[in-house]
Image 1 (cartoon, rainbow, N blue to C red):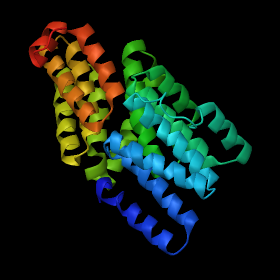
Image 2 (image 1 turned 90 degrees about the vertical axis):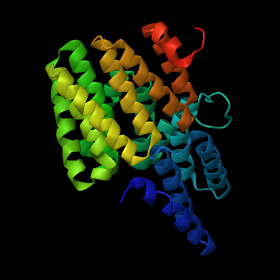
Image 3 (image 1 turned 135 degrees about the horizontal axis):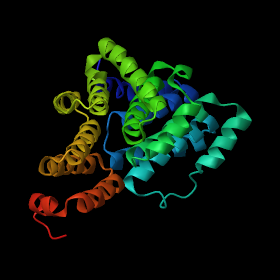
Image 4 (image 1 turned 180 degrees about the vertical axis):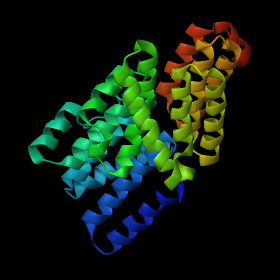
Length: 295
């Protein structure tokens, strides 16, 4: 089933557990709902309120592990929305990692990893993504985390392979393509867009530009069918960069503008602002024509 139809079920389980007085299970269900909602592209402004509720309840019911995992996940939301400095009482990654190590909470440590990778990924800081990836390869984690790592590590490694020509990045990227192709066969509705995106990046690395462009377009179609605005935004962004790097500036600017609109729809205003600055630097003339606003 599509992840977007499964995640809301955790709220029903939360309500049922609370009615039965099973606070621990209820809080785990609420945490799962918050975490899953981030990955299915729930509007981040709305999700901020849900995370705050989860954190407040976890603190009230003294569910400390749930509290700290929620904080680690919430940090990525705060970064993307640009509200990182607005929240008092949200522990830093360093504080959370120390807690995770002292309590031997693998759940907390893994969620810190994914939260940090999410931030570096949307910042397009590929070196930082791969520093975390190499310390925590997908083979160490369950399927849900492994798919996220394959996306983040796959895009980052294939981009670095193109930029540096280092074979180790190609190898990691090819492994990510292979892994996501397998997941695509299991659940096309959830993973087809990722598999196509990684294949497009691999075609680009190989110099097969026509095939890369066609595969980027196919990934956009699959992301749209997936009905998750943030996924569609990501593919438009990477396709736009591909176009600009290959002298298709007008189409590149158009794709980046589409990405910008989708990121705003997601509520990722900090990401949108960063992308806006990138567009202005890359091609201010095309941007003016698209937005009808002075630069």
